[in-house]
Image (cartoon, rainbow, N blue to C red; front, side, top):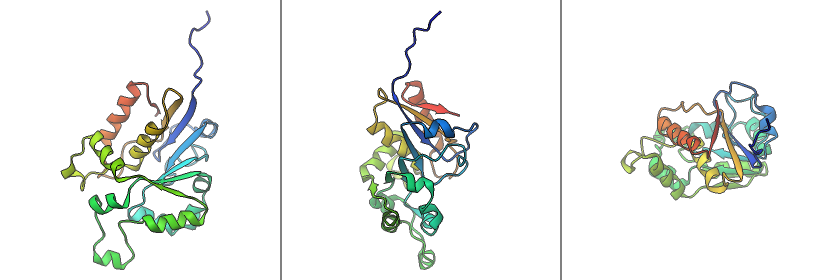
Length: 212
């Protein structure tokens, strides 16, 4: 008996997290219409292809310092393939909420804010950078229920802001938005439980699709 269901005519966005991926999704990711990634591949490396259209970057802290000192990162297929690089944290947000290195650490080259250095580094390999406005961060905290008084202790992840950006710029009626490589665990100051619930609510609403 023929099916009454119609094929999905929407374009496909893959949002690739850096957590483990059970099955190799390289072919389906690379064949999708748009791919968003974060920072640099970790557990998902080799399991999610190489196509990258949008690269979301955390422009603060020791991980950014390490990336900027690594020519292999800036010349990697992930960075080189990106047509758009987006910094998740505006310098005003970093100054207002993020912990700053103490004097001894600063003397050793540590910084809380690597925005200017990162703009120069990405520019040197031919990339322009978009910095999200401060309101993007504060609105995101409000959606997750993080009160103002807790925002120096709890920080939404780069992944959460990447998802928020996609939902603000791509209509789910026209785009099938698929997540993979999201484990909702890691740095203890991220609000993993709240972020996972936010995503699953969107799954229930048929706005997001998650491959576990």
